[in-house]
Length: 198
Image 1 (tube, rainbow, N blue to C red):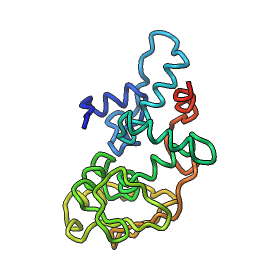
Image 2: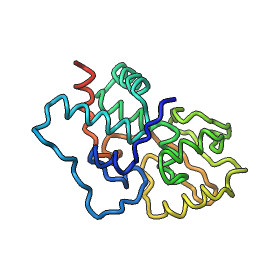
Image 3: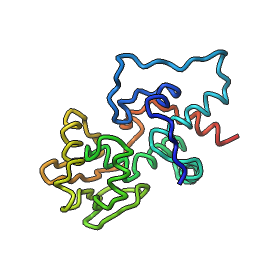
Image 4: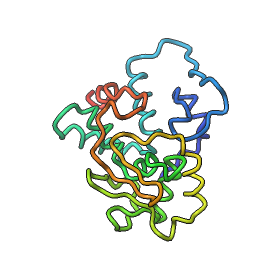
């Protein structure tokens, strides 16, 4: 699998993303906006929004395009459908529930088989959860330092309304798929739709 080895904080600066969105603590008070020598073209804006979404969720181009095609076939607004698909990925849900400090850490936790969905081990980060699913930490992994430290650092993080978490049992349930207003990311998905519709 292709890996982007650009330092996270540098990539955040390039795309104008606050590192807190990814679960990293921002060392500086202010987030520097990327330098622009000339006025950004319409295509440039669309491309940046797509790169931003891909970077936040840790998805590569082929998979991202596949998600877009799936969102396009679904009923409703394509951009909102795309965001809903990205949010319902298992690695993102693990991050949102607070079982990992970052989405990258959540992806690794899932890949190593430490997460159960409805009591069954699932080691595919792109697995899409459905309303009613119960996501829990595997019994053997409950004492792992990584998960314990994630819970401590995520104490102040608010779990989205479409998820419900039980910290004592280290499990969370998916109440519903999120609406766009429940996704707190500064992404203009309409620009991504326009880019792919060319």
